[in-house]
Image (cartoon, rainbow, N blue to C red; front, side, top):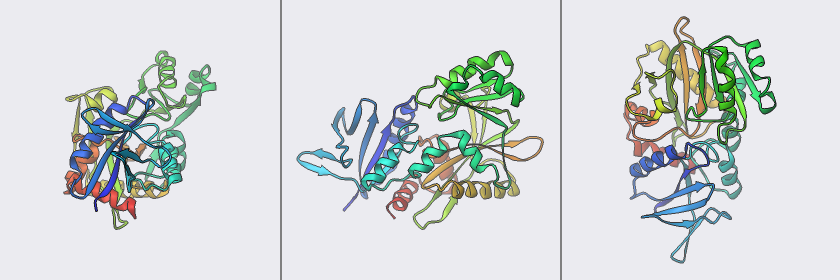
Length: 333
């Protein structure tokens, strides 16, 4: 009997459009001789099973099931490919925990924590061989005083970003003080990001993104790193998703010591944060010091054919379908 997989997509933020592209790619890679795959679209308008050609049926939220042709479909596992809230911030994971449905991502607490960039940096700050940029975390009641609080503690240029956002939505690189208030307002007002803003000092260096996952045997596998070189001011939403603006080099040109050091750091991050499934860690390699600087962790990374994780899976010598099968098998254990 085939394993019944709920491929969860959609979401409540602007990242939903990326979720749909990611889930379409994952669906195309899953072995339909092993899995009965049902695409579940979660939006502010409702939760629906997508049955093709525009047909859909409401999800029974009592037990996350579908009623089709007089039959009740209950799932063995949820493959979460929903970027942003509620799939990446722990809300969906908490619900699945309550109804007893296994899933492929980090747990509720880890997911909620890692969506908060400032809190995550605090937990990782003492890991050997990793550095974190100086930063200021601002809450909504700091909005009027934000410029002063930032300028008192940080030196230009700054990166200003929603503390709980993704895909670089609401993010700005600030080169001069006159730009700061507008950048803070943009980050505070980004949709569904909790009205918290993280401001960091700029780190000059090469940017990398690297995946890690736990396979069905329980082994931690670090994938080859990707170096990101963009013609944009920084790796913003357009750089991530508009073809031709960014060069992505997989595997990245790192020497052996740098590769080994990155792998040690990423494994420690995974363990320290109690991660599950696949995650992706973004970091800088500072030009003048050769030090690694943590940027952020993504617990539901993009999964289009061009996304970092599929690139890295292929560079590792693995087929994407086999990779997703490992995630499912690990979740079912």
